[in-house]
Each structure stands twice: as C-alpha cells, then as structure tokens.
Length: 218
View 1: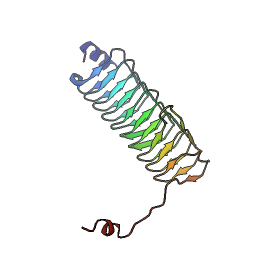
View 2 (view 1 turned 90 degrees about the vertical axis):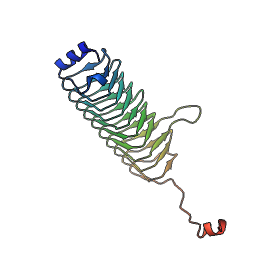
View 3 (view 1 turned 60 degrees about the horizontal axis):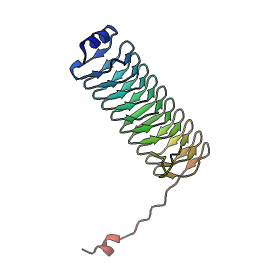
View 4 (view 1 turned 180 degrees about the vertical axis):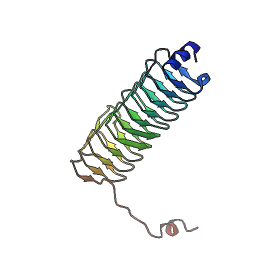
C-alpha cells in the first residue's frame, strides 16, 4: 500500500498487520484503534469505527462499519452499513442496501441483499436473506432463504421481533411472520404467520417398506 497513507494511518493507531498485502483507498476513513489483517481490500468511501477488526482477505467497498465490530475472514461487503458490536462472517456476503443493526451476528456462508437485520438478531449458517425487514432478537435457522423473486418482480419478507425461524425454511414473499412466532424446521411458508403462533408447512413422511427389494431385486 502507499507509504504516505500507511504513515498517516499509523498516527491514528490503525494497525495494518501486513501492509504489503493490503489495498486501502485514500478515500477511506478510519477512527482510532482499527486492526486490519492480511490481504484486506478497503475500497472507495468506506468508514470504519474505533476498535473494529477486519479479518484476512475481506473486501469492503463503499460501506460503513461501526465501532467494535468484528469482520471475520473472507467477507465481501458492498454498499452496506453495519452498526456497532456486530460479528460478520467468515465467508459472509453483504450486498447493496444491507443494514445490520447493533449486536447482530451474521455467520458463515450467509448472503444478505437489500435488507435490514435488527438488533441482536442472528443469521448464522448458510442462509440467503433478500428484500427483507427483520426485527430484533430474531433467530434464523441454518439453510433458510427468502424467496423474494417470482420471475417478474421482487417481493418483501417481514419478520417481526422475537421470531424463531426453523432450520431449512423457505419464506415465499410477500409474507409476514408476526411478533414472537415460530416456524418448524423444513417448512415452506407461503402465508402470513400470526404473532405468537407456530407455523408447520411440510408434508408427512411416508415410508415404503421393502421398496428396494420390490423395485430393485438385484
């Protein structure tokens, strides 16, 4: 990276662990005591708050990172805002229009686009959240997706506060999950869920006994 810029950042107590591998835009703004690991790219008008850590090989473009936020390894963040005390990644992808509120956690292999994720909400594993408004203290189970595109138009998913979304859910937008509701694992949610309700949307398991012997005698 540019030696002059490196010296200026050192004066602000910005710690760049491997300057030879870092790419930092001169337009970027840093508050004191930021730590940047190897292979990081800070592109465009990005702002990073005090005591935040940017993990190795992450790319941040035209985004705002709040205070004391941890961006773990191999994340891509573009045109997004992340508030204070958040944890992102590893291998998370935040696309344009994403807002992550205070103390939220976005885990590994999660993609978020044009959505608001509320305070203390967790989206931890292998999920896609697009065109959604997610409230406070929501847990979104592994493998969950918002089905936001019907082939012609994009539609919104609304998840209110204190909701629990079960593992491997498909939320078919437009749809609203009411405050305090639960959805069962493996559900395909196509209708609004009232507050404090449990939605189960899956077919019953059927076991065909001796099916292999009848259909594959060898």
